[in-house]
Structure formats: structure tokens, C-alpha cells
Length: 314
Image 1 (cartoon, rainbow, N blue to C red):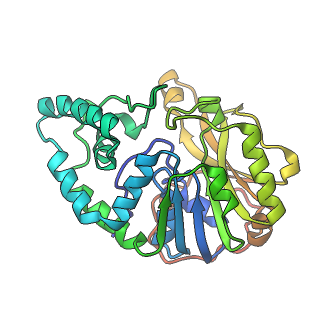
Image 2 (image 1 turned 60 degrees about the horizontal axis):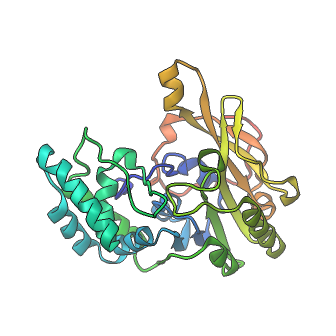
């Protein structure tokens, strides 16, 4: 059985998930994702039996609804996708634009699944009016219906009966987490979007986000944050303040496409911050993780107790 990925989503932490999971307790009551996106971390946890329950939230309402349909109505959703998908390249291109127009008019999450499967690099883009405006990838027709069905059914099998999906402001989610929860956050990146990330209808305020983290610290809530990073020696985004007492772990994400095109030997590192309560629990220390291709996508291996994090740089 392979790890399901019903749709591509730019910025997904799917390939970094095996490393991120090292910084979770061996067993967690519930994983909460206030910025769920494709729910890559939750599905990785579910596949490895690392959590009992999951709370998936995304401010993008059709996306949150789509996650709910994948989990709770996999068969009807698969049938709808099969009826929507087009095999002939010429017809598929024009069809994509018709579906995009229908989605912007109706906000039907089932149509969003087709757009995500077919658009350029799985890159969600909205204009200033909140309309989906990403173009189709002219080199491919999107996930074939048989593969999509398999991915949807596997996703549902792993998550059904132990997940809730919502579409609320992240601050409302954080205000309602429990002491037994572990929160994983992958908010809009400053270095990419400034005050507005086109994956979302609006960006988030840096000051508001820091205040929310401060409140979590006061409550002793365990959390992790994927937040900006660096390309070579250049850092992106305003760093999170030292008084939050977060442990920074850098994850090598590979050579950037732009660096490859320019012939530069620059590697992207994404930042993973751990709250003090979580870092103390798993024994985390500041370090840099370099890529190990053999680790990528091995989500379905038996659960491993990682214990204390070694000081050795791997």
C-alpha cells in the first residue's frame, strides 16, 4: 500500500514529513492542523499510527470541504472526478477553463479536486477578488480516474472515523485546542507572500500570529511550525522572536528550481520551530537535517520511537 496523495498542493510537506515526524511524541492523542492544505502531516501520522485523532482546518472553505468529502464520501467523490476528467488533450484544455469558471461561480469542492489535479504544479492561486485563477498544466491531463480513486479510498480508510474538518480562522482553532493535542502549523510564508499569500484569500498578520503563539506557550500547548527558511545564505521572512523560546530545526528541502535554472549551487532549507514544551518532551536541540533520499516517502513502515534527538548532524 502506498501513501495516498489525492491532489498536489504547492508547499505541501509530504516529502519532509518523515523528518518532521521525528519531532512528534511516539503516540499523540490528536494532531491539529490549523492550516491543513493537503493534510500531509496528518496523513503521514495516520499511516504510521502516530495519532488517534485529527483536526483538519483550512480557511479556504472549498478546500476544507474537499478534505471532508475525501474522508467521508470517497466513492461519490471518485465517481464525480471520473465523470469530470477528460482524456483528449484539446478537449481537456478548454474543459479546464469551463470547470474553473463553474468552480468560481459555485465554489463546489468537487470541482476544486479536478482543478488541483490539473493546474500548474498543483499551485493554488486566487486573485484579489478571491477567484481561482491558476492556469492548466498543458503538459499533462491530471491524475487518471483509477489512480485518483485508489488515492481517495486509501486516504479515507486511514482518516475516516477519527477526523474532523473545519474552515475557521486559525486563532479560533488555537483557542480551542486541548492540553493533550499537538498542533502542527504551516501558515502562509512571509518570504513568499508578504502580507498576502495567493494560496489564501488574505495573509496573516505577523504580530497576531506571534501573539497566538505566546498564548499557546502560556497554556503549555505543544506545537510545531513550518515557517520560512533560507536559500543558501539568504534568509526569508521576519524571524520569530526569541522570547517565544522556540527550538529551531532546519530541514534541507533540496535545490531550488530557480537556482538550477541559474546554474547556482544553492539549497533551500525550511525552518521547523518546536515549542519549548514539545522540545523538552522529545529532547530536541537546534540542528540541521540534510536530505536522505532513502527516507523520503517511507510513511508506512512500522512506527519508530525516536527518543532523544542526537546532536549529530545527519
